[in-house]
Length: 505
Image 1 (tube, rainbow, N blue to C red):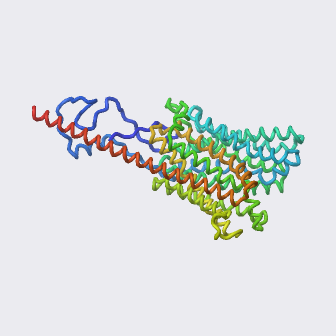
Image 2 (tube, helix red, strand yellow):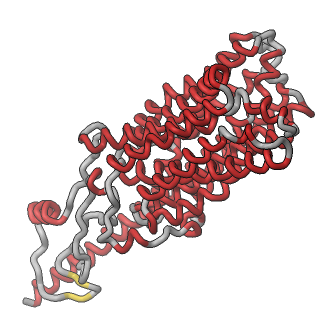
């Protein structure tokens, strides 16, 4: 069996890969047959000869251990710190900005758009960033992204000095858009770096990154509230923007320079080639719906929990349950995916857990025996949702990578960049649509029926995903069987020809 050739990665100093071999004038592995012609009578190879041939032609891939080298340790620490800082900076304004903006003449709708424009811009620019990463390099991309986000976040602290009304609102939008572009550049580059540097442990490392993402989102609002209380409007933005900028020296010192010797790495990836793959489209729908599932709770959970008699601090703890369970479980789900290779099954499990979580959170009117307005019931449902989000989202990127490679796309920065862009784009638009859809449904249908409908949508997707995966597996099995039968037939023909040549001799 010929060794598999992978294109060199710009992060090859951190990863093991198989050396390319010369594939010119390739011969059939049986008895010297080349391109349908017979060169000379060659004795049939023995089992011992075939074993020797395998040893000389096959280079076995070396499994990369996440904590195996100092470079890998530093890379994970660096990316985790960046992810934490950017997520905390993104969420720092949520506790106090609505009141400040209202005092400056912004309506509730405008305030909502200032929050939502970040996700909308990220949806638009992430695929483009993924396509151009091979041309400019992931290291350059993440550096520019951190400069844009850190600078815009720091400048956001000074918008309170502007005149109320149009000028104030305009600068809020501009700075939020710039921050979204910078944050998207950093996020997409992180995914691309992880995919290239840890191909054998992609699930576990992605899980670790999502843990720090969850910690950043959890730390941002309380940190912002505390800094605002004791230091005023400017301090939260200067602090978190400064933290983002402080990660720059770490990035420049730890992440290696790209390999300039490979012309392949200077070509853009093909977004169209990736989107032509049916499996990628199915997994993309999972990413989109995962954003909707989580964002649905932003405008709806607080008033629903208020009906249980909970005050603001206790409602905050209910939100914290989801993030805490997700942050704890994400690395373990990634590790399970790497060990078993059953990423598609993990995603289906995540869908089923999401269905159970939303049915119990209402609880659904369709199941009359479920306890009504019980805090413990809601807490269990939220923890199930946090766990479902880990199973639902963390295995998607490794599954997308495997699917792309199975369809012949190169295992290099071009494919990594495009897939990272798709991931970032769809999770962002899901986060934008989730609160919008959730708020509308909650207004017209109430929380219980809204959550039930969302559970139904998840159930439909789970069925589609299970059926598609089953059909895909059956097609692979059928193709493998036909290939084996074809090889056996070819071997018989070659052996018969060789036998005839021996008899004539």
